[in-house]
Image (tube, rainbow, N blue to C red; front, side):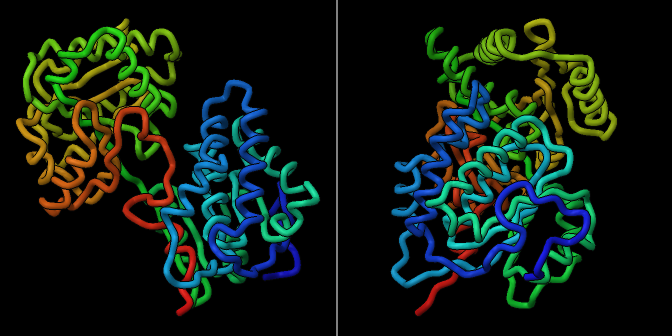
Length: 398
């Protein structure tokens, strides 16, 4: 690693030149730091749900569960120094990437955008304050949070001293970074554009009481509206499992989601224009939309575009800001041939996630890496896009 940061790079937290010494995964001091960070973030979240969720993720009990899950029969060490390129559409993502890098036993450089929002600024400040505590001097010595404008020369200069890179971003970002050389031994984890959907049981929704229906709608709101459906794991499409009930169950569902949105969501002119643009692009692109298939609920806070038929091309349907696509299936098995490699998360309501995961595996589905229940779409995990991040960012000795 060079002696100082390249020109044009600002140090936000940590040290300019982190030590590359590998630690064992789940090193005690790394766990202590993340536990302390959890307390500091939760104390300073001030009603910001993304910050609170990150603080909750870093709590000691969750870290202990992850340590048990990733226990290895062989000795392991981190790779060394990892460069993380954080996404701009998920503000707290850089915190999760840092935490996973630390848990895997690595020193870490986190690149943040020069145009940071309030959540990023708040989390960066709390991380800096926690790193400055004397008991975490060794963690600080292996951590750098930096900011710079998009510049491949700077990224390449940082990569020259790294043992791996983690790239969160769209397809164009991944392709651009992959063109940059790094040491031959270095590892790479890239997370490009993905797409997600929900599978809801029509029978289950029809049978829900009003309180239970409101709870489901609340959880689905968190999966979607909190990130304006811009997160790769936020559902763009709802597929109805036609296992009973009547189509009225669908209208009941969208009305419940509309009531939740009315209580919590602000639809401004920009958002309304963007979602209308996306609907028009889908229609102009020859997508199989049903005739007169656009329905609005709660004064337009929810827009539902009905598909004439589901197809593998559905992974190109981009909703957002309360625009959802909708279709139906006779059985969960019908989902398997519809899943392209672009599909990441399937959010289940009234369908057991473990059962659906087994169906996907038995059917040798090309897509669908995560199967979760309502309310869990945005929950970060150490297994992501079908990859064990702790295993890939560490090495076995044996």
